Amino acid sequence: MRLTLYTDYALRTLLYLAVHTGRRVSIREVAQTYGISENHLVKIIHHLGRGGFVHTQRGRGGGLTLGRPPEEIRVGDVVRHTEEDMALVGCMARYGEEVTPCLLSGGCRLRGVLGSALGAFMEVLDRSTLADLLQPYERQTLMHASDPTTPEP
Amino acid sequence: MRLTLYTDYALRTLLYLAVHTGRRVSIREVAQTYGISENHLVKIIHHLGRGGFVHTQRGRGGGLTLGRPPEEIRVGDVVRHTEEDMALVGCMARYGEEVTPCLLSGGCRLRGVLGSALGAFMEVLDRSTLADLLQPYERQTLMHASDPTTPEP
Image: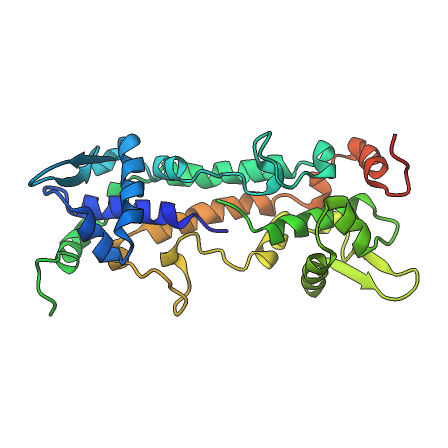
């Protein structure tokens, strides 16, 4: 069971912006920090922008900032926004998308049980915000470690 | 977020056997019922056999039966057995397997929060057995609907 890499990168981008609140961050900087393609990241950031998670300022001196304070960005909301497919198995797919129809579906509670399990999963993620993910006393270290203007030791 | 198709088919195979307790089922029958490749299914069944979920009787009159009563097969145990990768994101991968190293990992609680969410997910699945998934009053319908010896209406 995996979240998509798309969600993985989206969360990391938001965490990076949360660590660097107070300044604008370039897409290149995030891409280089995580070793991901800038083109791929552009799509993710555009998507995050549509959800209000990221604000993009164009032009000189522009860059990315969080769309809301990290205390107001719930991990669950990010995952819900970036994971297109929350159907854990074929029989949970929406009507018309079902790729693997199941003869048992009429009398089988698997879908319901998996739905409850997914609910419990999301409930935990909904209790955490970006701010919760970053321990205050370690923020300094992170800002130092991931600041590209700081020379490597 | 998806479970693998492998797990999906493993669960369906077990459910099929649970519906048809009392007789031996052929691999071909399960493969045809769900429209999956027999070769693929053989691997899944071998894997389920190693976990004690399925018993295979070779030779004439042989076939598949559940390795334990459906009341004793927890959905969580099946998922744990068949999902190789329970690392939801790159930074949760085991040491040496990390494909996408993250600079933030030292000060980031994402791994912990996702771990808790996964725990909540598995807890729900551990509360359900195969028997719970099949509603008794619908078993009859299922046996009828999926029995290849019954002519199509």
